[in-house]
Image (tube, rainbow, N blue to C red; front, side, top):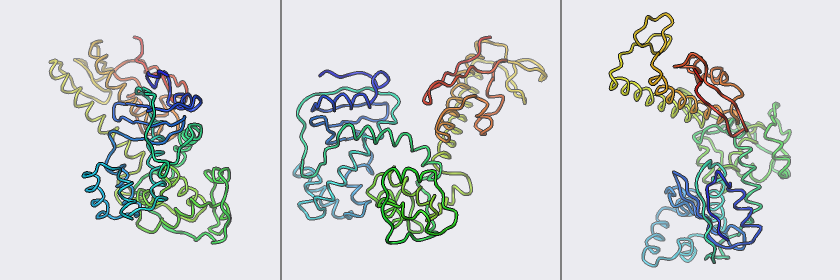
Length: 392
């Protein structure tokens, strides 16, 4: 089966579904501007997922150390043996007695799922499926059905915006407000999903019976001073499941999030990180515009209405169409950045550009500068929009 193309034409969901339905074996190679991921499939099931550009913290050995399963000396010893023998790190660790087969199976599955699920956030890239037999170890690997991967991937995409509204930073810590009763029965998935919008106001035990094993594990790990990132590392649940469990505990009144000191003084979290990157990008764009205008020998001065070339401040307008189109490219980039921040915070693009002004992401002048008429904006699907300069 020859399968090759771009993710804009054929998304990751359709690719995995096709391979799963036909029970094919082989390696699916996916590449974006920032990463390359290889997914090994056996009879339509995912058995391994590796990131070629994997950061040190995403490697199996690093995950085992951060989870508290092994120590740094054990990892160094295993890596030295691996370099000499070229054996798999997991097999070396099991042979040394540093890791049990059950722990290795659990952490290998976590590494695979965390790699696969981030593909659902890719907006562009290429793919190519290379059919053939793949090498995998049934003793330490649990095959994942393609259908299960699809359902979980879509669920995470839908729910992440809700989770990140409250669990807004990997540097958050928590204060324990109450202790869940020891005899509370675990909840089913539907019950836990219902807790996303829930809130317990009385500070008592109401709703405690809806806490499941994920919430209990997250609560035990949420000791004062321990960050979300550290809880994720130790929970062995994955980033999404851990953050969702923490959200349920916050909504039920068992935990209270405590912002990091830097965030309390100057803003922080996922959204604040996007805002800071946006402001840095706007500063770079502004510097580029200034340099380009200076190199072009265009004399300008700035007043409260924006850039004006050779005119009095009153009614000052940029008259050079070439220069306006040049500046409009950077203004469009600014607006696109603001739209991405809005979507990150609200879960969807705004219906009108004026919403950016209401959220403090843009000024009224940004919606039209350097033109007389405002930019043309139309929201399409929740994941798309059209943004064009006006016709003058």
